[in-house]
Image (cartoon, rainbow, N blue to C red; front, side, top):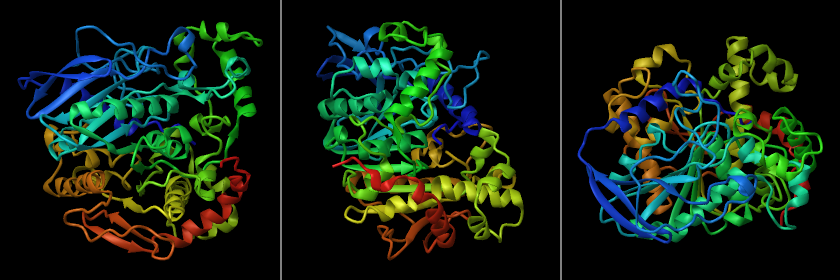
Length: 518
């Protein structure tokens, strides 16, 4: 399941974006020369930003459903003070943010990134953020991803757009037939992420960044995309570390033939004939495609970009051997409301042996929520960490809820860690829905943000005000819990019975021994 629509967070994301757009602080122009030309950004309150920078050519015409190509160079200075358009997606007619926080203009010409850096930075660590939104919504310019706190702590932050929905994740027999023998297929959004990382490799030194110290991190679909990058051979050497926030970890591979069948059905919905040619597919109007998406997304094993699923890669030791942080939130079941999944549906599909392990849940609703959270996020994250034995992995659990809304929420929902990681409300003051952070909220924010910064700088997440966080092993079975009471605690054997039971049920369905990877 990769369609993670963040309705509970969308108003917050949109409000933050509006706050940034209407800021009144004086800005000073600043120039930087990169491989494709001169950019003119601006410095405000010590933070230098370059927005709307093209990292690849517009994926239009013959480049729709094609691997990203190099952006054309430009003559003279290019203004980089405004964000580029969002990639095509459903946008609300009333101007309110959609499920992924996006609003306003969209365009197929959307392969832009944004850089935040400190003036005078030199050999600074770099973090590249992959946004969530189920590979169908969202974008890198949302206000919740404001990088000011990272920049002030000595980190260069890059946020990106990548192709979404049917324009970013699509298979069709005609595309396969027309492609070159070794040309990657289906996961064009993941190809975009790789192209952005290549751009960073070539250009980030001009902004004061260290191309050999890049951490890729993402949440939800962005976390799943990070796992895809750890799996894809084409991404090797483009990043040194990774962070996966609520990014699954378990999924059976979807073969290309199955994806082609799904894509043919999807293109028919968009108005293409049953025997559509590549030219006819690329002539479909954007509006007919923007609201459509294929199941599976980047999990399709096309045999070229992805020769195996991330689950297969970790099971067989084929993943990129980079240090990583991986973790989840304690109430990922907030997605049940988003997807309109009733508790009865979860309980119906769960085998009796699995439900028995959750017998202590006080209600059926609580039991379903725990089953959902553990199967989708918690147990897979522990499994990925355990499979990273020859490269360190740190496992976390996030349970903190802001004090102002604590009485109204059953736990830390999907995506609720984002303002803590980015420390975005330290600078903006208010984050969506009128939530005003308390001193305790800000203490937890500083701690979690510091973990991420330390990891980006050194490869070890040392966190002020928290115990020493050991790398996870199956033997120590220890994670760091950003607990509901605001205290970071080490926990050993966290939900062991439940996670073990989930593994017993789900792992045999993932075709782990059928890997085609080398």
